[in-house]
Length: 308
Image (cartoon, rainbow, N blue to C red; front, side, top):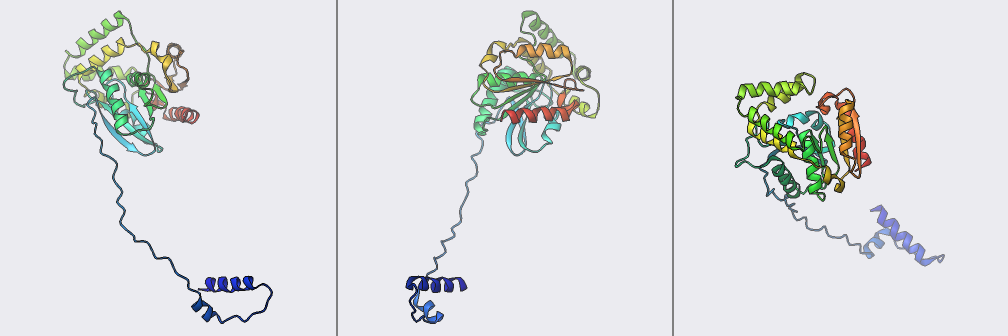
């Protein structure tokens, strides 16, 4: 062990100063100086306990979890399934929790039936607590955007930044609008599966350009339970979150299609939100994340950088 030999010789020289003394051969020095190597600790097997198993399973929605990183909850719009977020979950950097609302896109309707909005918001709060998600980003499209805002005002301690993708704090909110929504519910629950699928396709094509991606979204949406969709329409047209938005503590980003009339109405609804930003996505209609994913991701990234 050359390093130990040098250390012993150097120590003896330093201790004796300039005096000349006989120095024993190195072999004798090593024999005289006992250097005890520390015993290696017992390598006991360390068992790492697995994270606690989830105790809460939501009934108002199912969840498709992908990726790793900061948690981001993705809430689809009316009738849509998790595949509406395919362009979003394809990117790295987040642990995505894409919701499948019960009664939408082929997922069985809840039994017994319950109000859609209240059930989803309550289950989301329990889900965030049970999975120990630390202030996740909440993203909602259309009806999902309204749900995202309702979650944020009712459970401000649980959520981080909120991103609303062409959603509204209020769509109707008056008796006439609610009455019309009830008529829509009565109609779609009486027309039969084939007519319902055709009506779904027609409605979606009015909101976005046709193509394979929209076709995939429509195919899932057409599997929705008409009664659940009808109930959700009535609830959506009955809600007005504007009086509660002043208490919103999360920063909010509203993404809108390139339509001046839509932009003016939507902006006016958020005037009381303490921290908010509105970004118009060019060359996009209602399904912004599908129509222009590059601009969508640019806006989301900039917002989350400014509001981590």
